[in-house]
Amino acid sequence: MTDGSVWSSLRSDSDPDRPIAELVDSRRLTGPNVIQLRPGAVIDVSVASADVDAFIRRWSTHTQMMLDALAWAEQAITTRRVVGGVSMAISAPIDVLYAATEINEWAFQATVSGASVQAFEQEVARLRALAAEEANAATMAIADAAARAGVCCLTDDDELSVGLGRGSKTFSIEALPDPDQIDWAALYDIPVALVTGVNGKTTTVRLSTHIAMQAGHNIGVSSTDAIAVNKQVLDRGDYSGPGGARAVLRQPGVDLAILETARGGLLRRGLGINQANVALITNIAEDHLGDFGSSTVEELLAIKWIVATVVADQGELVLNADDPMLVQRAKDHKGTIVWFGTSNTQLIDRHVADGGKAATLRDDSLVWFDGKHWSTLCDIASIPLTLGGAAKHNIANALAATALTGCLGVSVEMIRQGLQTMAPNDNPGRCNLFTVSDTTVLVDFAHNPDGLRALVPVARSLGKQKRFLCCGQAGDRTDEEIRALAKAGWDLEPDAVFVSELADYRRGRGPSEVFALIRDEMLNHGAVDSQIIHVDDEHQALDRALENAQPGDLVIMLALAEARSIIERLNAATD
Image 1 (cartoon, one colour):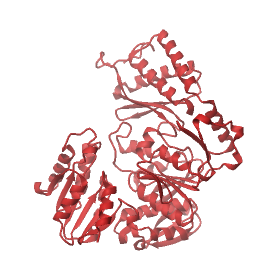
Image 2: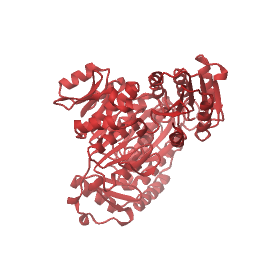
Image 3: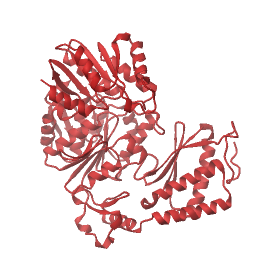
Image 4: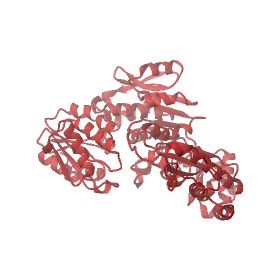
């Protein structure tokens, strides 16, 4: 393939009549992200691997020409090769991100279709007008003043805030003051912790919040469930993206923030804040693979690792020493690392010998090394979330919460008290136990193979006669992920499986398609046809399981679409 003139179209050698690439998505990046650490705009482009180099060269040339023409020459151009194509970004001032997306889209069209000099000049005039209309000098003036004052500035389409939590002030974008009118001496930032990973995020956030509340903090929390201050829910929904983070960080009564940071928000918009005191990555596992930019666990790790970038200069990165991918990636981290874990004792011992902080186990007790002294916290069995030690994944979550809160300055006494006072049902949807007519019901939100495998020792520890599994899966998982979930479900050794259709979660798949994959995989591993029952929804699955169960049996309810109403129902019915 040859590039030819910059103004000519770029076509595939294998099919000259076909454009070389397809635009998958175009969006703003409002904070640090997997491609660059600055705000900007990105396009995701599907392009054959053989054509990527030529496409990047041509797109970069067009983009730089437009940036120069608009006097945006100081902005950076960055690319990220992924399975199936490339993501290409330009940085931009925070007040002109929509114009930046237009620049990116023009460069894409110019690359695949060509452009004339006259058309280029017309586009320059159009984009210059768009940027001038969008530009907000007052926003940039306050952002610059905040940087000089050493406090965070958060902005979106409607509001701008300076400082964080109790030390913040929020203004309407339509009525921004002159920076000289702001009492900068009254503004400050509060400690912020970010929590990401694949499994254990929400439990770790909830347990860390509980611990910090024992220490008297007013905690602002954003998560996949809600935004809240302490136990007061401000709004329910998935607030694990940058919008939820900004909402929490603008709460005037909050003196510490713990922000769950999920893959979707990280990939689509980036982080909601560009600095934090502590960042925690619980683990990396196969989940939500198949989306552009997160098709492999390696790409998923790169997305999760964004949180590490905002603590590299000043702050602490808490990592799972039992996760090989995190251990390997940590070798390149320039900042301070704090480890937690149970099995990689050699790594933790070396780290502690060098004065590093760590949370681990000794003789069935949780221990914490603060960089100078070891402290024994409590026995595993005394932590209610571990269900007497059977919920091994919650031992890991307890260690993670210990490290997180220890890094935030919570005392050993308060960490100990918090670990021992949070009940399983204070963590809704995660390893909750109910009794209905002498049948035990275990409710969990496990939605990937690793999460489901974590329930195996829990189910075995309950020692019930028969087991009934209620499960389902969203259609946006790959066939391989759905099959792996089914295999993990069958490892629970159920006597019958009730598979919910989850019509609202088909996400492009046809009716019964997910059920067929689950059924086929379980049959491959020894199930018989009569053991796999198709039902409409999760309440029906629970009904059928309870109808078949006898006193002393166990129902494992993997709640997804109707988790909240399932828990409310079981709370009302429990003996």
